[in-house]
Length: 294
Image 1 (cartoon, rainbow, N blue to C red):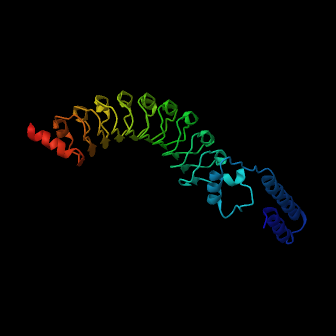
Image 2 (spheres, rainbow, N blue to C red):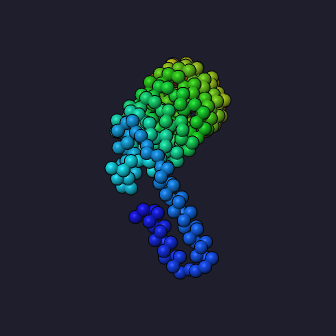
Image 3 (tube, rainbow, N blue to C red):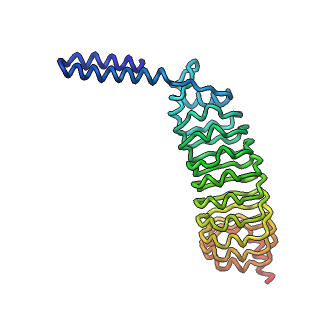
């Protein structure tokens, strides 16, 4: 039953029990309600999806309230707060910009190249785009709503656009081609950073990120970790598969619980003696051998 029809039925029931001025006021209010309801329907905009895979995913999310023969409107899109289509071959996000109440989405494993439609979403706080083809992050610049962002496996080399996403708390950038992490120095709210499998050598930009508690840097080109010495709140640290010769900068990380440091150039484990909270050490066998030699 349409909304305006419901209003008319209610009007007949309610007004039938009233008389005089009260009846007039109620009729006036109900007329206004009917006009507003009709106006909402009349001014709804049909959403155009360039990508059939995205449209199918949106329709599946909105089912069963949107029949296959009925266009998806901007009003329908406002009901979407979480969107998790899975790896369904999405290539184009046009149309998703109407989901203005979207707060979290996982678009992993698709073939997306352009994230421009997401820039219009004021409430989007969680965005996962693992294993797509997103190399241009410019549309994300200044998205203050983002708190969690995942972009592993996209072939990204330039992350300068992320410097404006200053509310990020969790950032995942594994398995890209990133060498310059200077833009990350502006992300003072970062609590967890995953940068494994890149080409990072200079960790200086991380020195001021005092809230970092989880840092994954395995599989890069790191020799010097002295920039990490100020990060005394670190709980989990991964620096395996680099060219690190000294763990001395870690000696002040007294809250460190987990350390992965295998496959480096380590010869001295003594800096770990002060890490009384350390309960999980991936490189334990290697470092024990070093201790016995000492």
